[in-house]
Image (cartoon, rainbow, N blue to C red; front, side, top):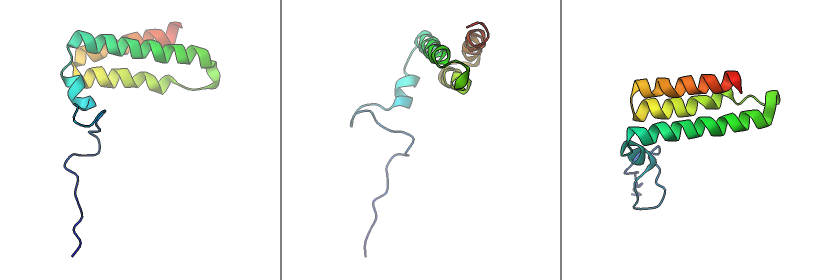
Length: 93
């Protein structure tokens, strides 16, 4: 009878390089200050793309990515900081 191999890890835990830590483990090991800086950098990047594309392309949904990442891997109040930064960037730039 033919046996099928099963995966030892879920599909969501993809690995950058075989034998290295995955993205989730990497983000959990980062300091909270580093996660805030990463979130603010992503907000700046999304804001730059938003300004370059203008009103023709709707990229506002991508502001949720840094909010999700910082809230999930750090704390809720840090997610609120990123949320305020995203709202400011969307409103005034």
